[in-house]
Length: 375
Image (cartoon, rainbow, N blue to C red; front, side, top):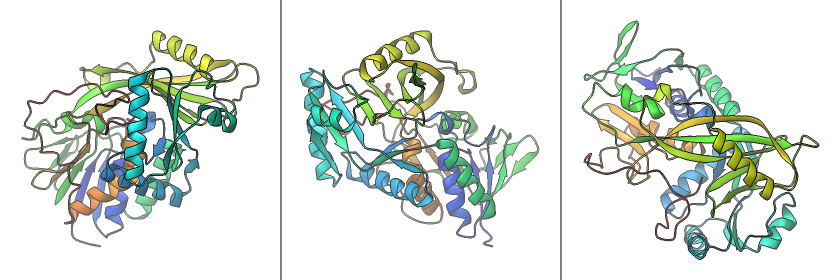
């Protein structure tokens, strides 16, 4: 075993992946999670994964993550379809994005709405005027991923401390109720709680929280819904994906300024009403809610995450704008590599902001921002 010691704060997908990668390189890793593993943003994520990005860097990160999900046997292959109705601005944005994604080497193309409904008869496309499909895509059960990676991390020697809230001190140590713990380096992957964890340090992460909402709907008649792809309605800015016996659908995002632990975890009545009305129009077959929840995501001024060294020996990975889980295998491996002396991900440096930038709620598909991605 190496003499190097690393403390990781946050037991979500990125923290667990990074811990496993470090332990595989004979580093002594201790992971601290304030609740249960995967109980934060990871456990409330939709699990949608694709490499349909305009930016070459983002596309390659997502592609590597998809490959890793496949290697682990947790990816359910499923194309991703996104579409617009008679909206010139959104339709033009989809066409622009497809062109950029193709130039980035992605298996993406425009497709006739009739071809979508023929392949996926459960999705109503009568009113769709513009559609695109990303073929290198699928979805992952986030709980399955957390349990699998956690088990492998433990087998590799990672010490996992759950139900253990922590703060990082000015000296770069991790403070728990049991005392102070010193490490050669510390990685904070605490999602919405990152700001609080780092409050006693000089680094103030340029992130802002926003609340998202999700529900799962089943057929009111048979209990199952078939013939539905993963999809994004770019005109109304909501997404969906099939589940074992229904459809998961969400968005309903709003900025959140309160303490991370105090956000409302139940979905709003207005969200449930609006999303169900949209589902009834978009999905072939009556639907009823079987589950619903809300979660917190983090955004940055430029909608790229903060990944890398923020102070000597202190690293951070946060601000993923809802795309953290789908990129967690590659991001976790990349930050582990950087901690061990590798190069950072260009453009993701956490110190690139001066603190004066505004942080807005991530929006949907717009032509004016060709690199803005959909949920």
